Amino acid sequence: MRRAQKTFARLFPPVKSPPCSVQKGTLPFPKQKTNRSLHQAGASIAAIRTFYHLGVRYITLTHTCNNPFATSCTTVANGSPDNGLSKIGISAIREMNRLGMLVDLSHVSVQTMHDTLTHSLSPVIFSHSSAYEIHPHERNVPDDVLLRLTEKDGVVMINFYRVFVCGSAEKCTVEDVAKHVLHVARIAGWKYVPPFLWE
Image (cartoon, rainbow, N blue to C red; front, side, top):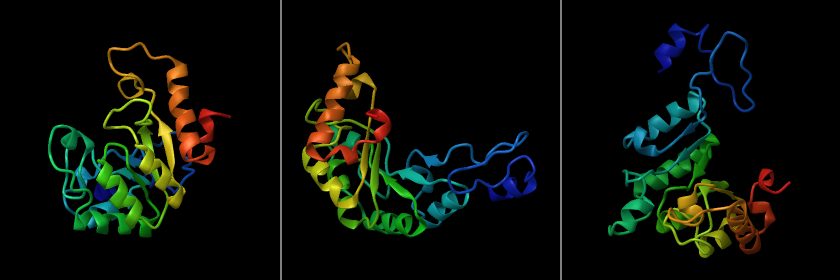
């Protein structure tokens, strides 16, 4: 990736830390500043540094299955044990903290949430999750985690996808989404629900 960026530097200027300015006739490299999961890192802390160098500023720890760093909520829902963060997962959290990358806890298991809140020195985010108490789906955030979120000054960005809001067979409305927002605000506080949802 670095060679491609260097070879085509005129077309792909390096991504600057936010805010990223893009001039006419160029494309940011990479186009997004997020990494959907640490699966792409293999088991390499060095890969996290490379992602940072390329402009990634937050990483979701898992997606729909476990990786060497952490346990996914999906595998736990399918009957596997919830092992939380691994030793290399703790090292990854510390490296992301050192670099200034946000740790995204959407898609992770409950034990991974707790382990990350224990080991992270910086705020964490849930980039697309909702409140478990309102709709008990494994992707949603339980109340005990919402209470701990205040320790790290993190945020929960409410997911609007109906499966996580009220269930796939139900017809969801904006009022259903509001129930999740209000619940997070009631348990953790308004500070922990991003303002663009309620201003």
